[in-house]
Image 1 (cartoon, rainbow, N blue to C red):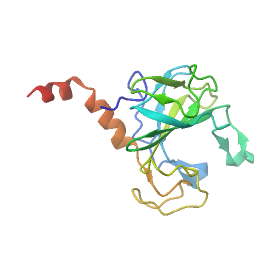
Image 2: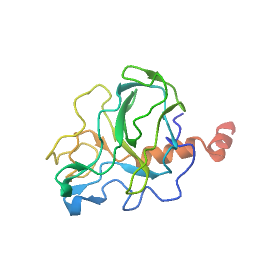
Image 3: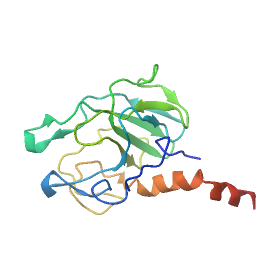
Length: 184
């Protein structure tokens, strides 16, 4: 049963702007391709299930188009393949737990990263993709055609998904109500 990617539930709602999937970015020129989970810098980022790291610390994750593509903060991203899809964990620190590199098998609940310090607020950027076999780049500039979400300028692959449903499921699956209902 998947776990929430942080050791606590964020106090800021990730299903409402400006943190939600589809929220306006870049002065309305782009749609947000993830849910941002507000958390202090240094917060552990947990693997939501058993999987394999397919990309570790690919480089500076977020650059502001308004600044000519200059980095806003030194944050990085990691992509983990799960049996049901790919997750991009973004806005993470360059320092990862020992042994977390490309090809590493990770287990549900294992710390795989930490939230990075930023000057724009700190959060975990959580993106979800439906095809775990496709390891092509997740960012596709100008793509407007998607299988699971309405057309918008996300600049992502066609199998992009709104991760809010998955995050709600993690919370429900690990709640005492869910556990009680399983005993009935």
